[in-house]
Amino acid sequence: MRKLETKTIVVASHNAGKIREIEDLIAPFGFSARSAADLKFDEPEETGTTFEENAAIKALASARAAGLPALSDDSGIVIDALGGAPGVYTANWAEKADGTRDFSMAMEKVEKALAEKGAVAAKDRTARFVSVLCLAWPDGHTEMFRGEVEGQVVWPPRGARGFGYDPVFQPDGHETTFGEMSAEEKHGWKPGDPTALSHRARAFRLFVETCLKA
Ligand code: IMP
Image (tube, rainbow, N blue to C red; front, side):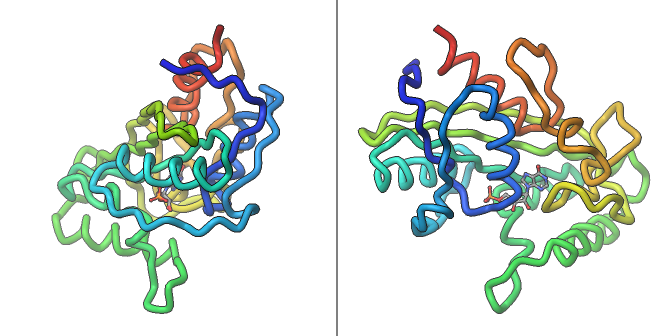
């Protein structure tokens, strides 16, 4: 396991929601972070078939372009009744013909697919959010961290906070969706805290424990 020695990293993402969450998570560690979007790096094509492959593609592209360690996130929602879809294609389900993304449309697609399967009862709507964080160095070394959170897909969407599919995901043990939670409740995590709720916060905790601790 390679430790992170520098205090400057690139957040290898062009997704504003993810960048905000990752910046919140790294703030307590005193890093100076620039995003791939800020640095105007091209967005690499995500040609992998696993979260790990796509996370590595993004982190390596930014690390090589910047000459600095880069932290990427590849994530998605995995719905049991849909055989694991949309999974690694979660962002693609939101893509419109003009190349922009519409997450209301994507959530409707998910609901339509669930209705076609007759998945109406909560027990038939189980799902998990998955986040794989990849820390890559310019020399090609990578470290990978996976976080998951179990829950169910709810309909109609609830809450306008967060991003992406947050309004239709209710984590187990909670009455509110990610879209109704504060940033702190969804992905807040501080060093030493034994718990973290979101998939991204859980993966981040492993990253800290592996790459930042002496
Ligand atoms: P990718 O990792 O860039 O391929 O995109 C993952 C997609 O999954 C994002 O565009 C979001 O729509 C969705 N996603 C990942 N994490 C979250 C989350 O925390 N809340 C809501 N949607 C998410």
